Image 1 (cartoon, rainbow, N blue to C red):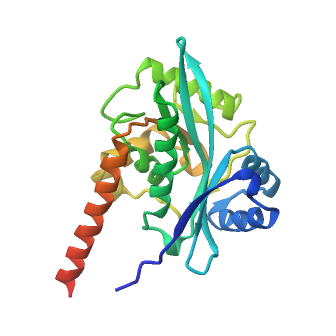
Image 2 (cartoon, rainbow, N blue to C red):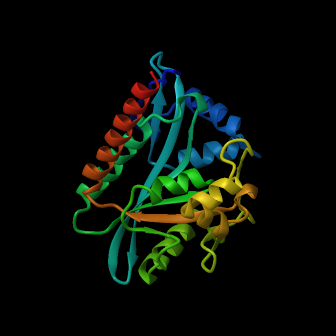
Length: 253
C-alpha cells in the first residue's frame, strides 16, 4: 500500500514571498498548465494579499493557493469576498487535507472579522475538481444543477469578476472568458472528464455542460456563502473519510 506523503500548510503575507520562492511556485505551476507566462504569473501573484504554502517534511514547496479579500456594496449592503486564485499541488502529494484545512481557517477568520456582513468564497474554476471543492462542502453555493442562482448572488458574481477580470465575464453564461485576458490552460492529463464521470456524478455533468470550453481555459465563476458551521461540518467530513479509508485498508489486509 502506498504511503500518503505529508504536507504542512501555512499562510504567508504576499509581501514576505521572495523572488526565489515565487520562481519555485511558477515552476510547479507550469508543470500542470499550458500557455503559462512568467510575467503574468508574477503580476497576478503580487496582486494578492497572501498565499497558502504547502511544504513537505524536508521544507520543499509542493503547492500553493493565493488569496485576496475585498468588500462590495450590493443593494445597499456590504459583502465581504474571499477570492482564491492560482491553486496547485504536486500530484504526488494530492489527497491530503492540509490545503483544505488551512483554507478553511482563512475563510472562518474572515467570517469572524466580518460577523455583521455576508462573507463569500469566490473562485473561478478551470476544472471540475475545483468546482467540487465548493459543491461538496458548502451548503449555499452557486451555480448548481438543482437550484437557480438567486438575483443577489448574480450581482455579487458580476461586480466581483468586473474587479478581478475586467471585461471578461459573461452574465448570461457565468463564464470568465479568455478574450482580452491571459489565461492558462490545464494540461489534458490533469483533470480530464470522462463519459463515466458525467454519467455517474450530476455535479460533474453540470460543470461540463455549463462550461463546455473549460479545456480551452474558460472558467466558471463560482461562489459559496461562508458560515461558521463550516468549522464543524468540514472537519467532520475529513475525519469520516479518514476513518472509512482506514477501515477499507484493514479489510484489504
